[in-house]
Image 1 (cartoon, rainbow, N blue to C red):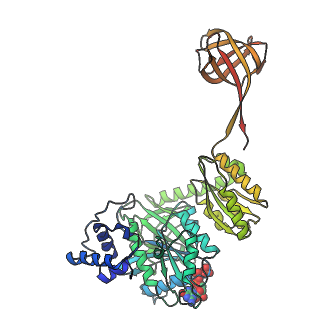
Image 2 (image 1 turned 60 degrees about the vertical axis):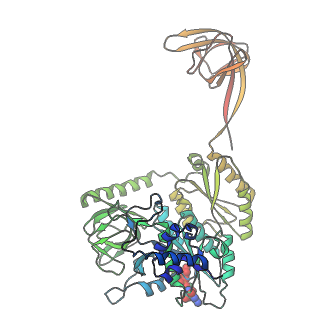
Amino acid sequence: MTKKRVYEIARDLGIPSKDLLEALVELGMPGLRAVNTVTDEEAELIREFFRDRPAPTAAEAPSPAEPEPPSKRHGKPRPPIVAVLGHIDHGKTTLLDAIRKAHVAEGEAGGITQSIGAYQATVNGRAITFIDTPGHRAFTAMRARGAQITDIAILVVAADDGVMAQTLEAADHIKAAGVPVIVAINKMDKPGANKDRVLQDLAKLGYTPEEWGGSTVMVPLSSLTGQGVDDLLEMILLLSDMEGIYGDPNGELEAMVIESSLDPGRGPVATVIVRSGTLRERDAIVVGGTSGRIRALLDYRGERLAAATPGMPAVVLGLSGVPAAGERVEYSDNPNEARRIAEGRTRATADERRAARPPKTFEELIQVAQTKQLVVVLKAASAGALEAAKHELGNLKADGVELEILHAGVGPVTETDVLLASAEQDMQPLIVGFAVKVDGKAARLAEQRNVPVRTYDIIYDLAQDVGRALRRLLGPEFRETKVGEVEVLKTFDIDGVGRIAGCSVRSGRVVRTGKVKVYRDGDEVFSGEIASLKRFTDDVREVQAGRECGIRVRDWNDVQPGDTFEIYTVEEIPV
Ligand code: GTP
Ligand code: MG
């Protein structure tokens, strides 16, 4: 039985993949939307459907029949923003170059264009924006600033090399970002290419190919010969249709810097990608601690643009300084206002830096955590050590708290690890190393971002500390110790104070800071704390057995002669 991919059927029928996807829903085959393959019979059904009904053209396509997925479908479909990640030398740059050569219209200035960190390819009349600064470092650096620019990640794996350390790392970064992924199995032209081995490796990572019943799209290709590259592009478009990638040109501005530099002739130059809203020449903007009126807006070929709409990369000229990658672009009413905001921010960050305490301790950081999820980046000296550490962490449990290993890899703790951890702003990140070092840059960044990093030589210590961190997230645990018992002999009501119990201490002692459980005829009728403890008219801290005292219970005036108080102290149990 031959199987065809959905987009191949669409191509055979000469219809856009999007229309085919809508037809699948109408035909009651929504399962096939999971970028799946189609059997001959199913293909025949689909063909019949389109024979009976002329395919709608893209221009007059009916509004989709299926319910709209929440949040995304605002505005209009926009070009997807795609980032390419993968292990060193697996062919990220070559792939981006191959796409650029085949699908990017060259600029008028003789086709010599400077890389601006992004470009747009045109495939079947539709645009795809590629972020041209490959590597998960850049990918996560942007996310660490709280913004997600990428819609789809391409994970490049060389067929002759298979899944390597940075493939694993990239996969973890992609998973943490929660963006859909397409795996490009590159270098298929090489004699040593072994696609099955790559598929097996990937399956272990949780990426199961469609041909094995999974749902991860994998495209074998060669960036060198160009074979399969168009399939990849088709899959990107198909996935974008399924994801519903929308942007509202009239909506609120959502744009981010992906690259920046200081050009001797043009001043600060920032490459910005717009996800939503529109940037225009002459707009007053604030970008981090820089500001200005947009003097010129250029496209990726260096040509003048009047406006940058959703999905477009654009070069912005006219800023007062060089903003950092990952910084958001915001509108302002006018350049003066923009300058005021930017200067305020610069001052604020300088103040923060001055006010910053030396790095917090591991314990302090964990204690302030408000979250119930601990995310861990784990590094170890060898694959064996890593497995052992993972196993130990897997055994840790604390009810109500989750431990998630965001990434586990072999080697020292690097800047990338810190970026990955610090991108988890809503959770409590923690980096632990087993028999590895922390490199200098990583240590500095961890300090800046307040990400706790700890290394261990003994696996037991590592597991114990992480276990403590987990339990601390639950908040402190307390231990109650009964210290004494008193009997209420009489009561006095004092205006403006409340009811005082005149008591005799039967056993143990009463402490001023203690808690009280009140018993009446054997039943507990109240539990609270001591508000005041007196011997005669003096406030005292403690009263021993055999003596009398006056006790006022906080917020409770119902005490009666004959009641018994059990007195407790409460202490925090160290974890
Ligand atoms: P880094 O940027 O260093 O992480 O590497 P990269 O992933 O960008 O790899 P790059 O594109 O630089 O390719 C590495 C080497 O693999 C180069 O010599 C490429 O010519 C070669 N290469 C890339 N793709 C293919 C391919 O499909 N087939 C073959 N035979 N060689 C390839
Ligand atoms: Mg490269």
